[in-house]
Picture 1 (cartoon, helix red, strand yellow):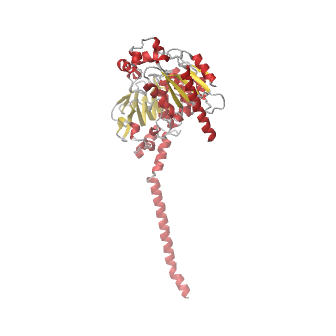
Picture 2 (cartoon, rainbow, N blue to C red):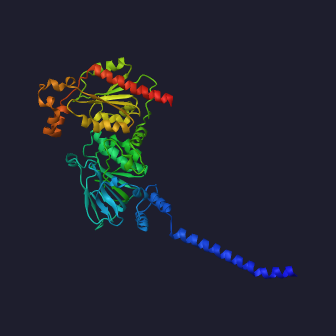
Picture 3 (cartoon, rainbow, N blue to C red):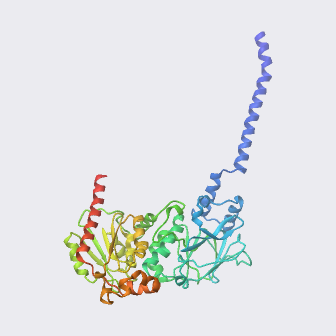
Length: 475
């Protein structure tokens, strides 16, 4: 009986405990629902932005606008960019407190706008809803060069006042640029346009549309394999299509870092010029990523038909062959087959040439190759250093200078030794400027290398190749 009385009094208490526990569980479930519904995590917001702007989803312009408005935050990649990425800000977005146009270096200005962005080629206008003032830009990466920009059309960024209606909607970003300026010169093709475009568009993995103003059909055709690597879409000739294009994002003006180079510290994913070279290998079907010398080393001499010619090129070929090189002689100009020449350059171990646009083909050399640049007489080291010497190390290329002496230059046949052109090139530069420098030291000069000096440079190049081979065998 005692046991029975104890059991009877404990029954209400057990029921009460069950009710309390159930209430606590229901409260926890309700709080979880509220948190998931109204307090989305930072990771969730970031993923939503990434999907709406980069992945290949069909997102309407209104949805993109709502996505931006709903958070009022920058994309994660924007938050990670250092102040040095922007340099000098020339136009800001007051609504989201972020830069729209900026000058990262003196060489380029880039405008990057997001939201309901409308682009009208007929009036060369970009309409941006969140800015409050107009801004003008020439979308070509040579901002410091008035001569180059004189050939580039100006575009205007405007606020949303009497904005035209969309006639064509797009779900991926646009990259607006001009292929005018100095294009047609291989060096400028790459350093002013192709490398800067890579800097801006590599992040999209093909989900971006190129919009070209002042389009040169022949130029686009020449580099179409590169454009196909960077974009999954047809190129838009914006000046002639009479459309009002609506994009979720527009980048106007390619971003320049340095000559033939990419600064990884200024890229979101820390990519470099090596990724650019990898893209070129894929575009042109190049086989060699690195030098592996399993045969006679192969040497390419870049020849020229006009100025800065090698006057004794046959003797140079003979000298190289006696050292064991298989020698190729070729010239690159506007009419050169890009695929064929790229594959030739990629197949060699050493490339030599006098300073000029043809050396830009170094972008096709495999890692571990050797580049020998002949520096014309006339105190031109600063010019040759910036254009080809400095970029070579980032590309994984061994670099060697060959400084042409006066007795190796045809200038000695044109002027007496006491003439300022020969006696004091630096003073002549300062007095006459770029035009005088180009006329005397680039356009009027040809080279006749001393064969013993040439031989010593080739011997050093062989040492660099063998050192590379030894390291590979030991690893």
